[in-house]
Image 1 (tube, rainbow, N blue to C red):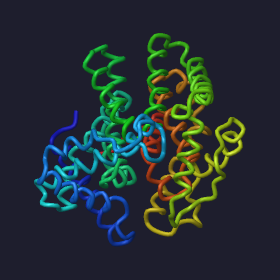
Image 2 (tube, rainbow, N blue to C red):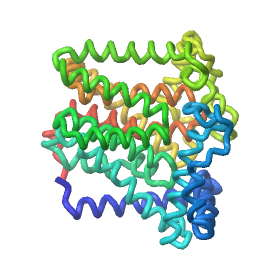
Image 3 (cartoon, one colour):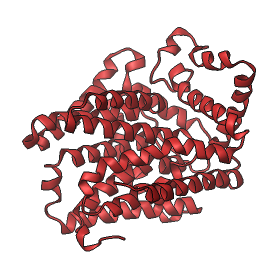
Length: 389
């Protein structure tokens, strides 16, 4: 179990990282979305002071046409798409009551919530690291990319919290069959759906693999293949439905919305079409962007250098395990817990590569899944020879 000193040090580190995030993006990148959200929170705070009832009611006032209100996956002019930003902005407005509009004090309040994401991740893996819990503690709470990117005031931190809450409680439900865990898992999944709906849909793949493997533990490899094929089939079969639930089309539109943005780290990415041929043709590019970038020649600032080191670390660990541990695949396919997380991480890598044409955003989005892969791969190192602390 984590003691008070460990949690305190980890929380302080998170506050420092969140403040550094705000300072760097204000002074080096002229504000970025984190400061735009802060300004929106200040404006919403005025509404809270002047008309508290309207402040809370307004989140349910759509201001969209009926078809836009019900569009869960639409990239533009959708109530559900904008709801994530609106919730975060209203949360910041409430923080401003106590912080008097200070961004850096809001960082403390914000990370008091997001810190639970790290805690859930630690609890999720602790059974796998019983002999080296200190190493797990260091990675979960102090791995620099995860600590930095998930401490800034953005939706990414809330995605991290909701995702880890869902994974922890759903897996705990399978192990204990305690009803409270499935209730909490549902709440966190709904939150994840609001803040990043495509990730929430992919999380179902993990839940499905875990649930079926729990009943048929000796058929994990077969179940893994079936789950992947089922997810692909359902994804493309959804194109037979009306536009709002046509996932290939909505994903192509999401990519188009990214393509229409401006930014200094744009990567060449062909426009997706809502058909199987288009997705298969762009797959190699999507894998390249998510798994291999940034290249050494693309390192233009310390954040890109950190991302390059992350990429090299993950690839080196994977190559090492594949070359020097013959038990990797047999043991992985006998462990539904780790196999499910690998499946989830890889699917999200590909999803990010398909939709996001900006290197900076790719680096930020994929850090959660890089961390999951690192935690999984470390299981096949002989950690008993590298006891930390």
